[in-house]
Image (cartoon, rainbow, N blue to C red):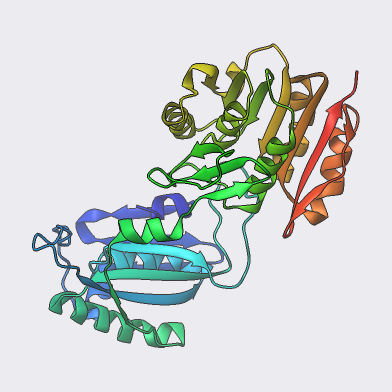
Length: 351
C-alpha cells in the first residue's frame, strides 16, 4: 500500500480498519467505517472484477479526476482503492516538475491530480457518484465523472510510436515497422518498463551525437543505460564493444533483451556500477541528471582514455555551466548541443 511509503509515522490496524496519521503539528484520525458511511458504500473484501471481456467486445470505463493538496493524497488515494477503483494515478497539477529528487525518495507535488478508474458497471457507477458527491465539499470543486471508451491498445500504440531518425543514418523503430531509407542503421526497440526510446530530448541529443561520432572499432560505456538504447545504437553504428551500466537490475535485464533483439548481445556487457571493467573506453555517454553528473565527474573521467570523448545529458540550460565546469579539469569542452530546454555537454579527454 502506498501509505507505507509516503508517511514517516503511521499505523494501520486492520481489525478496526482505522488509520492514524501523526503529522506535526496536528493529528488526523479517521476510520474506514466513517469513510464507508460517508460514501454510502460497504467495504468489499474481494477484488474488483477485472477479468477480460470474453465476448471480444470493447468495454467502457468511468474516470474521475481530483486535484488535491499534497497532504491529502494518502487518505483520498486509499479511499479510492477501497471503494473499488481499478487504478489510481498521480500527476502534477501545477506544472511543478520533480526533476532531481534525492536518492531513495518519491516526492509528490504540492498540488496533485489523482485519477481513479472504475469499470462502467451499475454498482461501480453508484460508488463513483457517491464518492464524487462526498468529496465535493472537502475539495471545493466537484469532481467530474468521465466515461471513456476502451480501444485496441495494440493498434493505438502502433499508431503513436513510429520510426524516427536521429542524425543522418540512425533510426529507432518498433518491432514490426520498417524504414524506407536504404542506408539506415536501425535499432529496433519497443517501449517498455525501462526509460529510453529516443522520444525524450535528452536521449535524442545523445543519439544524434552518436550518429556524428566515429565509432568503428571503438569501445563505449553507456552509464545509466535504462533500456540500453545508447549502447545498442553505438554497436549498430560500428563500435566493437559496449558496456551498459545501471544500478537497476530491471534496466540491465531490459538492455540485455533489447541487445539480443538487435543482434549485438555478443558485444555487450551489462553490469552494475561497481562491476565496470577497469580498462578505460574510447567514448562514454551518461544520460542521467545534472546533480549526479557533477557528483560523478571524477569517476566518469577515469573511465575515458586519453583523447577519448565524453557526452553527458539530462541537463537543463541553467545547469550546463555547472556541469561543464565540473568536467573541465579532465576534458576540453565542445560546443554544447541543445534541444528545447535541455543541453548535451561533451568534450575530449585531456592527455
